[in-house]
Image (cartoon, rainbow, N blue to C red; front, side, top):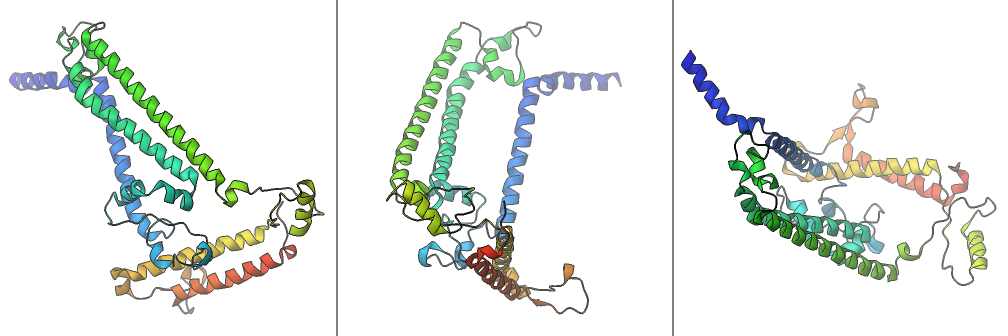
Length: 336
């Protein structure tokens, strides 16, 4: 029994620096949840994207990209999705990184381009810092002398602190080497951000020069009640700015139309999702989907209908109602 306890205590004594060291525990707490969250995001995205038409690239197989005026078969302005060559775990990320900036400006706008460029810049800064740290700083820190001090000394370090600056003696050559590396990394970060903002300024000027509505359109709200159509509003602004106003579109903000549009896009998404599922081998084996249009789909005696045809008819019905409401907006109650 005494021998067993001596072995157990000796083992704990050897492992205790790694088990108790606060920096090691903090590192593991940061690494563990981080990897877990990354795994959950990848699994969730890989599971959800084939089932959500608004996310996955299969929408390109359901929409004719050559439709007139940049509209898809549902009358929606589409944006070109970057092509995905394979269906691997990181395929969407590789496709996004390979997507050209000039093409993305036209399809998604300048904000999306600069956001993605910022992510690339941050990744580059992180990669350079990681390489410099692994190749230069870790060896400099790891060969410091504080780890060899007696355990009771206030400067003694152990665990992961051995490869940090805590293992470097203040004023030593390793200390100044660290300072030089930090200055170099700071210069790299400043140059990277300078290049980013110069690129943003250049693209912003080019973007504003393009003949796009976002470059010259103005949205006016709270228009007085006497201006009830596009002609009267145009006459007002043309009088204030002669020859400067190209066109006016008077839009009535009606809750009823917005509600119908929400139902319309729900029908579109339902139909597209069912069409995609039917195009897969698993869906083909099950056949065309059917459901009961009754409440909760559980009422007996109500015949089931073809789900794709049902949502297509709902889409067509709502589209007609929306068009009629937009042509006679004065018949709807405005939303204030």
